[in-house]
Image (cartoon, rainbow, N blue to C red; front, side, top):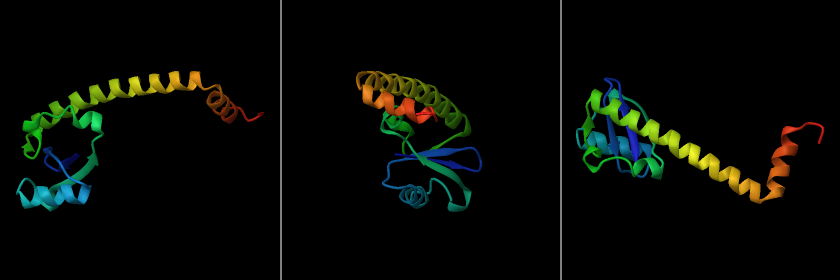
Length: 109
């Protein structure tokens, strides 16, 4: 799933296989013009699962875009915190990986 932002502050979330594919679909379905495209990025599966179905494949107003973006940003921070926590727990169970991280951080080792 891809998040496409437009220069007027609107956005669209598209199901597509690539950024180019998402942009083409948005243009074909007259959701946005190629000349108005500002940026785009792929949503992680965790974030894509948080997108309501009624927000996919349609142009979101500036207010809708900000609201959804803020919601995803908050959830993304929670997902990252959980991911970091799990990574630390896994590293604690694998002493070799901790040694590698530790020795990489210390130039004298």
